Image (tube, rainbow, N blue to C red; front, side, top):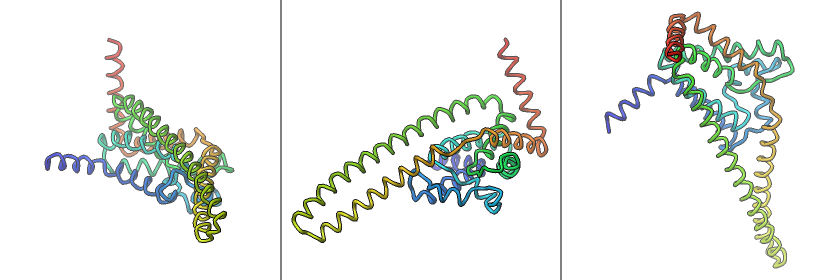
Length: 260
């Protein structure tokens, strides 16, 4: 048991940048959403990066607009982050992540000044591109794993939200029936308590409705992803061209073996 724990801790230490970044992103979302599924539009807009919000150039990377955005990014970050970090090191992982995220935001806004940005998509695209460059053999398997896991967890989240909505509706109907009886019996204290409960239910329903609307209205552009990938590759080329050369040779071997 001790050996297993030691191996786990050794592994986690080797991928510490991936663990730390993923942890920060998750904590950000849970805190900003009040442990819920949705981030309110006002909160997201306040923390977004735009030409009038340069102070958010770092923090916007860790803010996600919806649970779907969060889940897809987290799985991509964890899986591709592990591949890249195990092949290189934690410092390079952090450097690529920040370079891709911090450079993409202002460059993208030079072309699309009306946009505001939230999320780690550009930074993670840098990790995805460099993971592919240094370890092409594992890239395809990792891509399939990310798509599969994201699909499962996003749909599980949708089912959970639907069940919450059904539960809230049933609870509201039951509370309204109890309220009617309390009014008929003249029990003012009970009436007030039930009204407060109904208000809480309606507040929760409104939060979910606004969250779903904000999620559906959020625009996803492919350009930050492509820019993030490009900046990631450029950064890796500058700091460790040898790893790119090794990845290229590995890819050539794959092609040769495939042709046999």
